[in-house]
Each structure stands twice: as structure tokens, then as C-alpha cells.
Image (cartoon, rainbow, N blue to C red; front, side):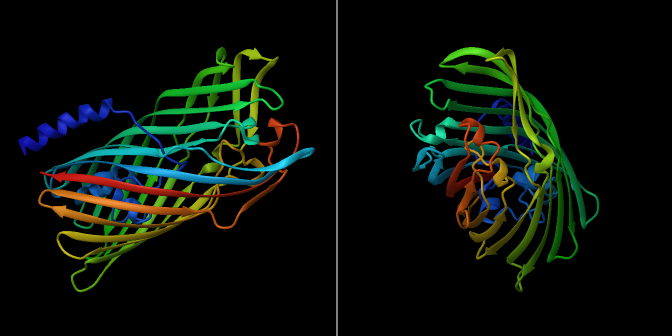
Length: 411
């Protein structure tokens, strides 16, 4: 236990100093196990990333452990028939490099009833690039948005069946966008940061029987006040401020174990996200630029409920197989779709495996996200049209590939 405690303390110091990110809007999975099961783990979360999925699940830990890994995400977005009045139509694709999303955690049981844990992860993230010689670059050729957090968490096993837990997320958020003014070579580049923000996660886990469990998790809203520089043709011109909150979420799930040895787990989850908290994106400039003190972009995002289904089959003490499906509707309506937030409804299919060798467990996951059909915009976007002073039409399609690996050492 002394060895485990010493390692746990050292890892806490490392986590507090770590900083890395990348992702796409909402998470495609924190930890390879959750990614392989489509995120359907609130009633069966592994202790490593219980601080995010359900803090109460920390009480499932039998031993102290440390975990580290990453998810690599590659988006592919295509734009066809991009056109406006008096301009010929054109086709183009995004130019985004693979994004690397790290995750780290440590878990420490403290007696029969309490378990402590801490995790570093990226709950929100997005980054996309477009070539500067495309028409879309006049709206945005680079955009990014992220929040990275460290979440210390404590869970209590109140009874043999009920556990509750909670944690506080200490985070930092960044955002930025760049574009080239239409009919001009003037380049605008903005980079903003909110140095410190907080939120909290709370959860409950009820083990009704040895086969049936239920989970409920609440992740709170995060207030973020961004500030940074706006450069015009590479020269700092003004300071930009923007308030834009990360939305709260409620996730709930039911898990059931099948088979004589209860070696097959099936879980179904639903996650509500309060995207509608941000009706618009207001940026203020000090000093004013071009006699303009502020810029407001309509967002009017919709609240969403995404549904996921996960399966886990323990073949042996060494090998576990997993699979999942997630329906993730977009919060971005046609009326505010642009190149900063080129999102769409997604079907996500995932597979994975868990391999245990002595004190080590290696989890591997791969997933494919597809936007069903093709999204058609016919001049209705109030976030896209002002970049040109004309109504813009386009047909958008896309997919995202993900692969992840997570390694856990059990003391």
C-alpha cells in the first residue's frame, strides 16, 4: 500500500502540470474501453475514467492503479457545390491533420467504503483546417475550441448496492479562428484563452442485483471568459473578449449481465446536452476595429439527446471483446452552420478489445463516425452569409475515424 500511495502522490504532481489536447466538439470516448462501447458506460464505468462517466463507479476498484493512453481522431469533411450569386460553384475538402487526445488517471481505494481518483482528459474539443485558397477560407480556414481538465474525485459506497461520488474539474479553455476577408487579401487571426475555470461531476451507481446495475451522472455547466489578441495581416491590432459557456450534461444508463457466468455485459445509455445555453457568440474589441466595437454571430444551437448501446464479452481472464453504437444528433441548425462549426448528425460504430497480462491491462478501440445523407444549405445560414455579403449554398458530407489505446497498471 505504501508503494501505491507513493506512486499515486507522484502522479498527482505530474497530472497537475500536464497540458495536451485535441478532439472534435464532444468526446468520442475517454479511455479506449468507453470508446469501444460507444460511451454507454454510466452504469458500468471502469474506475480509471469514472471521474467523467460516473464518479460513483470508483468504488468498483479493488486495487490502486494508474492509467494512460490517447485517442487519435481524423476527420474528413467534403464540401460540394459551394456557390453564391455571380460566383461559379466549387468543391473542396478539409485539410485537418490527425488530432491526438490524451487521457491519464490514477485510482486509490481507501478502506472498504471510500475510493479516491483523479483524471486528466479533454471533455470538449474541436479543431478543423481548410486550405486558404478555397472560398470557405473567407468564413474560416482554421478554428479550434477545447477544454482540458484535471478532476480529483471521491466516491463512497453507502450500502452494498448504492454508491455515490463527486469530483471538481479544474480546467483551462482555448478557442481561436482565422479567415481571409472576401475580395481582399487581409488575414484575420484570433486566439483566445480562459486561463482557469471549474465545474463538477456527480454520480450515483445502483447495483440492483448481481446482473442489473443503473447509473446516473450530472456534469455541470462551465462558465468561460475568453480573452486574447486579434492579428490583422500578422500584426496585433486589438484585444478580443468573449464569454461562451461549456454546456451541462445528464447521462443515464442501464447495464445487464447475461450468461451463466455473467460474462456478457449489455448497456444502453442516453445523454442530454444543454447546447441551447449559448444563443449567440459575442466578441468585443478594445480598441474598436474599422469603427466596430463588437461582432455577434448567431448560434441558436439545439439541445440534444444522444443514444448509445455497448456490449462487452469476457472470453477469458486474458481477452475481452467490445462493441458499440452511438446516435449523436448535431446541435447546429442549418440557420447557423459555418466553417467554424461544420457539424452534422452522426452514426458511430465502434469495436475494441481488452488484453490483460499480469498486472497490466491494455484496451484498444476503433470507431467510425458517418454523417447520414448529405447536409444541404440553401442560403439560410446567418453565420455564413455575412462573410460574403451574399447568400451561400453548399452540400456538406463527412466522416471521422478514431483509434485509441489505454494502458492500466494495477498495483
